[in-house]
Amino acid sequence: MSFARDVGRAIRSTLILWVITAIIYPFVMIACGQILFPFQANGSLLENSQGKAIASALIGQPFTSDRYFNSRPSTTSYSTADPKKDEAGVLKTGVSGASNLAPSNPALLERIKGNNDPDPKKQIEGDFNRLQKAGVKPTADLLYTSGSSLDPHITLEGARSQIARVAKARGLQPNQLEILIDQNIDGRFLGIFGEPGVNVLKLNIALDALKGAI
Image 1 (tube, rainbow, N blue to C red):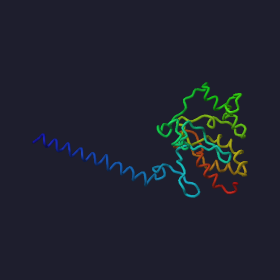
Image 2 (image 1 turned 90 degrees about the horizontal axis):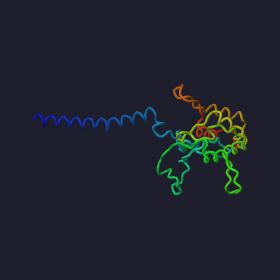
Image 3 (image 1 turned 120 degrees about the vertical axis):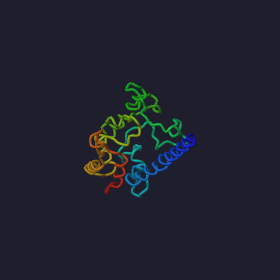
């Protein structure tokens, strides 16, 4: 009788713990997330002026046009990977991370500085020269990828160095863009961790909504 009673207690305890941990707890957490933090719980999705969700504020998006503030380089580029031409296996692996290229690595130097190959088809301008030609100060965050390669932020210096180029492309006054940047600064986490930065996607969405832009 004692053995049967112990087995019954063990089964009941297992069922109760299963209900608590596998059903009640997950649903309570989902409810708390949806009620207290709906934006974060649903992927931190940002919408355009038409109210359509276009991307997550947590994942860096590629911008290369002179009409927009450019983001930092990425080694993954999830948002631009083509499922039919995914030679690098970006979409298959789902892995994020830095390139791990040393400062002396020829591949990194070629991407940043370019090359002078006699064959025009093999010539690479390099990010440094491209930024300088566009009148943009080549700050570190505009040249190097982040540790995750998904960082959606650039530094305040990196954003402000692009003001002249964007203002010229859109027919805006530089002070309009300075104000826009100041309005879209993300401060330090909890006020003490990290440095202030600018979420490039948020900034460009606000840029498109700015009155007076061409």
